[in-house]
Length: 242
Image 1 (tube, rainbow, N blue to C red):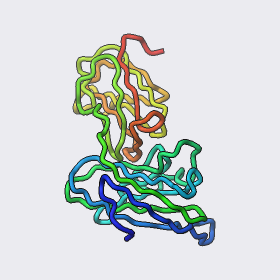
Image 2: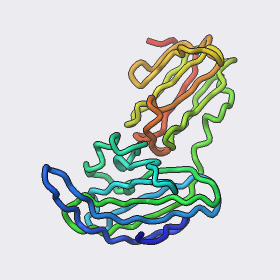
Image 3: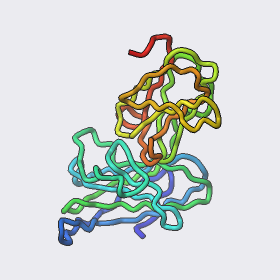
C-alpha cells in the first residue's frame, strides 16, 4: 500500500517503469492508494503525469473493499467497467492533459482502492487527485415535452430517464463521444421492445412513448460531462425526421 488518498486531497506518486516479461506483455509499475469516504457522493479520481506528460501510459483501476474491480480508465475522456473493455489505455492523446480519470459514487464509511499502473518503459512521476463533484442533474425522471435537454453519462451502469408522456413531435439525439450510447423509447412500463435511437439512427417520432431512457448500450462505459466524452443532447421539436 502506497498511502491514503482522502477525497479533496492529492498525492504525488513515483511509479517504477514497466518491465517486459516476454510475448509482448508488460508488467506495469504499480502504486496502490486507499480512498476512505468520510461522506457519500460522487468522486472523480485523476492521474496527471508530470514526468512523461503526454507520453504517459497510465491506467487507473478502482476496486472496492473486497477487491472487486469497479471501473478502469480507458483514455483521457472515458472509462469502463472492466479491463477487457479498455483497449485504448495505452494510446497517448495529444491534448491539454486532463489526466487519466474515472468517476464513482460511494457512501460515508466506504473504502475504495485505486491501483495506478505505469505501462511506460520509464519511471513516471504522477500527481493523483480525488475530488468531489456534482453530476449533471438532467435525467432524474423529470418531464420533457419540448426543447432541449443536455445530460451526461458519468458513471458505469448509469442511465438517465425522462417522462415524455405529454410530448409530441420528433426526438433527435446528438452524441459525438466514445460511448456506445443509445436512447430507448418505451411505450409503457411493461414495454419489452422499446424503440432504439443511436448516433447514426438518431431521429424518431416521440409518440406514443411515455418513458425515454439514455444509457450506454452495455451499461459498461461512462465518460464525463464534456463534449466528446459523456455529454449528450436531446431535442424535441416539430421538425420531421429526414
